[in-house]
Length: 70
Image 1 (tube, rainbow, N blue to C red):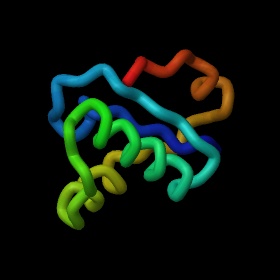
Image 2 (cartoon, rainbow, N blue to C red):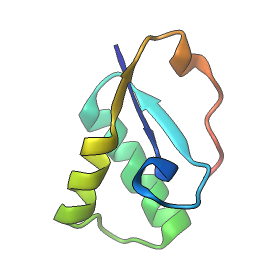
Image 3 (spheres, rainbow, N blue to C red):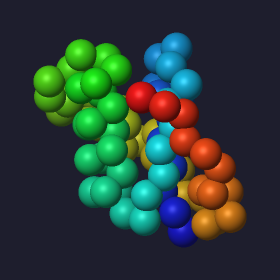
Image 4 (cartoon, rainbow, N blue to C red):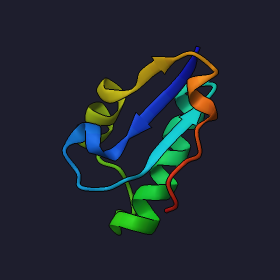
């Protein structure tokens, strides 16, 4: 299964979605996006917990959809 996260899943009005093969890889993508798009230099523990709770397992075919730009 592929891991998937979308900012909208934690209440943000943002079209960013990302997929990765592991949670660690996905969290790295989320951190990069958070820094570039949301001016977050670091993800605090509470936000990281929200992100991790919102990560979904999706079949690999669903993860082939294009990702929103940062």
